[in-house]
Amino acid sequence: MYLYPHRKSPRIDDSAVASDPRVHIVGAGPGDPELLTRKAWRLLRQAEVIVHDRLVGAEVLALADPTARLIDVGKRPGGKGYRQSEINALLCHLAGQGRRVLRLKGGDPFVFGRGGEELEALRKRGIAVEVVPGITAATAAAANVGIPLTHRGTATAVTLVTGHGEAGEPDLDWSRLASPRHTLALYMAVRRAPAVAARLIDEGLAPGTAVAVIERASTPQQRTLRATLDGLAALIRDHGVRAPALIIVGEVAALAADDALAALAPASRPYEEASS
Ligand code: SAH
Image 1 (spheres, protein in one colour):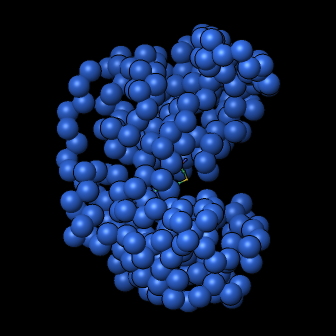
Image 2: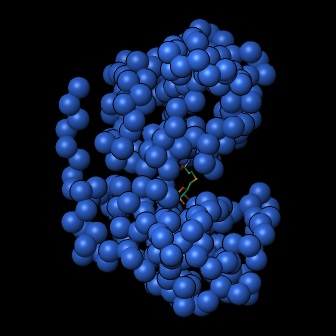
Image 3: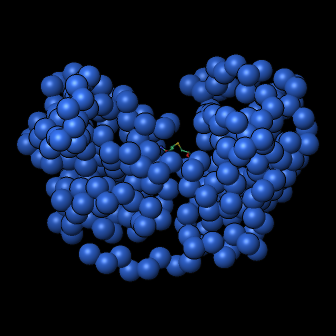
């Protein structure tokens, strides 16, 4: 049983909470194994086959059963990652063989994780699926550097935005995003950050709006950089920022701890051995 059997509320649609799921689509969180949910951890240890992305770190994968088969769909040997259609087909194929399949994704599977596409493909073939949430990069990064994504009087809304559309610039209502007291958490935006910053300024966001860039949040390599919106492009260039990095735009970003403080954050301590 998955939801709360003692609660009498009517179920609207329980097809994502199947009673005997063949496939679990699970969020692995941002990197720190301590940020896995207990459920993700249990499923990780029980899975026979784990289909994971490049973003899922070695420390998390190390928690899998040693006999589990690991399939990295983020990268083929010497080449690019699998296409989404190939991943969907692989999941259906493995589930069809009667395997317990864990589809492990960085962060949360339903936040820029294409978990919805996989769920749809599996459902279409009548394969029972359960989705397990994970801590997404925005909340992990924000927590680690002391940026409240919402803050009374300073930020009354937060939007998770992709910096990368299917064909370059994402199709977004930039004027709405460029509104005051609004935090933007930009995913996949390192390369397009200069264009995004320019666009937000064009739409009226103050050039002096605070920005924080958090690279590899929650891992020992976490790095935090701060700038203002008009200095974002230079910051990224001068510090050689690389993906995965989360960019937070909004006055709350001014509250970020600087690197010296961030170094004291618990997440930047070496991982402790996970107890079982
Ligand atoms: N499903 C994931 C997002 C996948 S899209 C989630 O919920 O977090 C990939 C983007 O996520 C990266 O380009 C980066 O912007 C962000 N990201 C993922 N892990 C991150 C991390 N540890 N630190 C900073 N950004 C991260």
